[in-house]
Length: 199
Image (cartoon, rainbow, N blue to C red; front, side, top):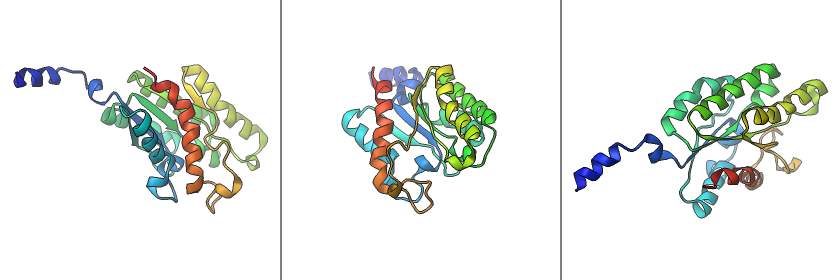
C-alpha cells in the first residue's frame, strides 16, 4: 500500500507540491536593506500569513541594488526553483533613480510578468514613485508605467509601496524605510495581496 501511495505521489504535477509559495521578487526595499531581516515587511508578511493563511509560505528572492534588467535575466530560474502560486514584483526603483529609459524599464517588467504568467502564477505588481528633482516629465512617465502594465497584463497593482510612510520613518539615506515603517509596508502589500489568496 505504501509503495502504491509513493508511486501516486510521484505522478503528481510539480505545482501540487509548491502551489502555495508566494515569491517576493524585488530590490533592497524588499530585501530589508539596513534593518534586521526579521523586521522587514516580507518577514512580517510571513508572520501574518502564518496566522491567517497557514497554507502559504513566503519566499524572498529579492536582491539589494537589483534592476529590472537583472530581474528579467534571473526570473525564469527563480520560477523554476520555487514554482510559486503568487509573485510579488517590486522592481523599478533602482532603474528610475539611475535615470534609465522608462520604455526599457517597462519592457523589462513586461518580460518578467510574461514569464510569471506563463507559469500560471498570479502577479501583484508593486509600484514606486520618484522624487520631484528628476524632472516632471520623467517622474510622470515613470509613475504612469505601473498602472499601464497592470492594465495590459490584467494583474493586481499596489500603486505605491511607501504610501503613508512619514519622512522621519526613513533611514539616513532618505531612500529606505526604517524598521518602524515596515509594518505599514506590510499592510500596504497585504491589502492588495489578499484577493489573490482567495480560492
